[in-house]
Amino acid sequence: MPAKKPTVLLVDVDETIVYELPRALRRQPFRLYAGRSADEAVSILATSHVDVIVADESVGDVSGSKLLAWVGANYPETVRVELISRDDPAESPSQDGPAQLALPKTCSAARLVQMIRKALDLRARLRQQASRDGFAETAALA
Image 1 (cartoon, rainbow, N blue to C red):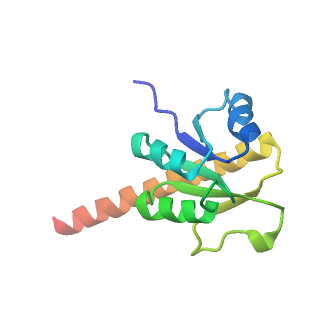
Image 2: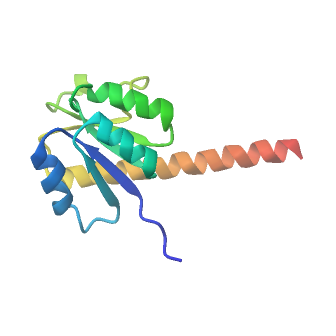
């Protein structure tokens, strides 16, 4: 059985981002979902496994930070990336914030792909850590 492609959810109110970027990224080794609002993102998360979510600062009626905080609480295994308005280290996510990684919204598609790969690597490391922790707990019970 072939390995399952990792999945990425892109959430942005900007039609150009949501409709054109997936076309530009179609040859990447991950499956890409796109949504234009927090409600669409929640619907996709409810029906599909998502490894990484990339959300703009504004996703309709809700801020991207609130959406990412909700994802962190309800899908803690999903790595969260926030698209920020400018390349400013002051806007980088804090360790206790809702986003684990940040990227300027004006970045190139190539830079977005690099960040998605970094997020997928983080997701794989977190999955391995959880497996090791679970094995250690099971071994301690024996």
